[in-house]
Image (cartoon, rainbow, N blue to C red):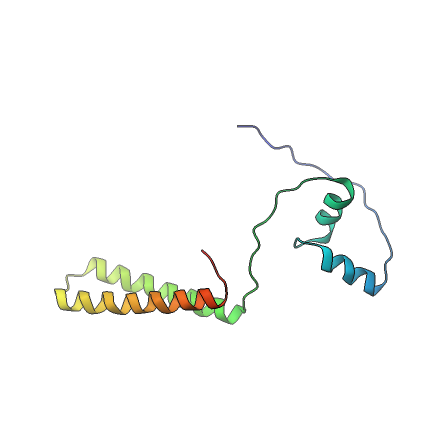
Length: 113
């Protein structure tokens, strides 16, 4: 495996732009940061592309995280306890319903795992 050498950038360039020009640069920039995009565009430097992370409401992410934690707790209890078949089937049915609902939420907000 080849080791990637870290590039140390010591020089900086300061340019003045209008508010409209800055906004135009940001609109054209396809990445999260303006400087790497400008280096790639102006110098032809290819950088590793970051995965496009969808912008999701933080409250939704907290709710999904909480649901995931609850599912993990349920799974742990089911796996460690001796339940009769009827209870296990009921739990599995509820888990399946939750999974369907999460799938719908993820589809609505275009979230992929």
